[in-house]
Length: 532
Image (cartoon, helix red, strand yellow):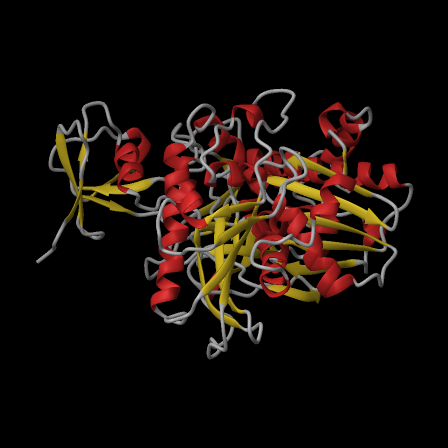
């Protein structure tokens, strides 16, 4: 027997059932199933914000597959969400650096929780895609517990701009989603590994938009020129002021942002780099948190130069025909075997279900090496010979990467000319940002640190081959994990309950470059679109 939890609405017209989740949701006339799923707080991936272009919000309705954003709610529907964020690979550690970019699945805690020796503090990284929460024993500085999950705001779009557009004048629904999810995760730790502990403080880092949404601030100033943050919020809040609950009674410290698109996550990341990795060993470095909104910092002894670039969702599998996030079954590495055949590796060694961002880079590099794609990004004559027409446009061509297995596992995975163009736009934006920072500083940095979950899965050989990373930095790149979370952990261990955070001087010192207005950006961007 299935018991249903009822999600009420003040203007109910019909009932929608989600048997797998045990939920009966109420819908109104004119609602789509996506509207109902969002209102019920259920997890679903929607990269296109509900325009029907990404194909990710697949559901079964009374046994028939369809898109939630294109299906009107009707009385008595029984719905199962097919594409959710369950199993998403989430990076829960900052690391001391590795040079090979090898891929590993990271789930749950990274080590056994320790016994409590005193008060605890919570370090929280709120990313556009994922959220990680760590409880730290202040007495011995050990990790007590960790929770990680996909940001529930993803139901409103994969990228920052989608959420800004949704919250231009009212951020209430997105604020309630993230605040509620974080509060529940904290409560879960307090009922488990942290039972009986007294919490001294909570430290949070995230990009500027994520902090606006957490604090329920409208995002109009972030979405309209000149893109200047409207609210210069304090760095210390009370827990119930942020989360609207009494789960904890302690201060909440939030890492400050530098600008609208260079947030507290990169500031926290710098703290982590300089306390755990650098310690003044190198004269200069670049830190990149690569994703839909790429944040870049170039730091030397005299200057702190920052910029951001709208790379778009292709680097996380968005806007790719068979793209997906870092979930089991995602192709993350591929090799061309000849005669139109590819071999590949998937996360968790599961049947192929799609291509994640690192898989996109690997595929493009393999196609370049095989002579299937030209320097301009177009299919060569050999590529055209092996390609087939797409289902939607006979002018567009696609290469088949994987077929379903004989046992019925996996999907047919293709890679189209449009997918190559999407990657060119993303890597062009990132590379142009790197090149302009180097030009402004006058020389390449001694080191380049790649942070964030996506950065850890990149194959550097493919990144150099496709021009995402400049070859002048070969041998100087380290993968450093979740540096935003690492900076929060440091603050939990070193700061007093009400701060100050070990970063406030950076915000005043930082100089920001507006890439869109930079005199070299258009030329650099156009150059970076080409493959090497």
